[in-house]
Image (tube, rainbow, N blue to C red; front, side, top):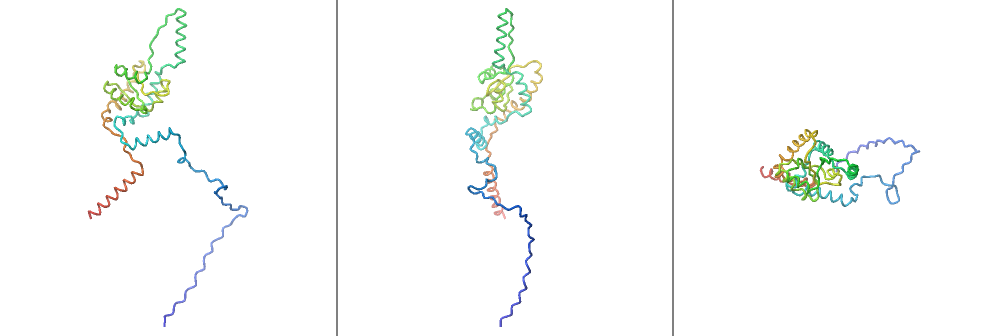
Length: 259
């Protein structure tokens, strides 16, 4: 005879969940986000924006400079003057801004009126910032420039890529700053590739000498170091993650072989 099966115990009564009190005044109306339905909530569409071509080119160029190997001659233009020193330098340069068209017209008018009245007018050459790539190069070659300021974002860079080497050969302090539009604003232009000072007023000589010392320490004295240092070669986050995973796997396999 087959053994008797035990009688199953009665199942425990299911616990009743407490009923949620719903206010009848507020009816549940779920939103339908289909065509003709409710408007979806606002989200960040930054990635889906079609940016202007100039912005796309700027970003692509920046990424390429990070990915590709950059030769030392070009990489030195990424080493710019620090913010505090750049601020004091631009304050100094603003004191020696060349006159604009309106000021020049007014000065020549006063001079013409004085000459018409028979007065002798003393013409004193003003101390101003020199600009224009050819003019700045001439002043460097003649050893008249005391400080050369070069923009970091000149396009094409070949226009100024040789200037640091020339300044070092002539033993003239030079610095690389951000950027060409900021230099252009000093000389009443849209942009300027390079500026230079040939002399300063007596009251500014102490401050100017301090700026020159700091600039020499940051650029002229470090020229040999920058001349050998390559830039770029930085891969993206996804590529770096793949490389790390591959290295981890190879290390694991090597450890297994050792055991």
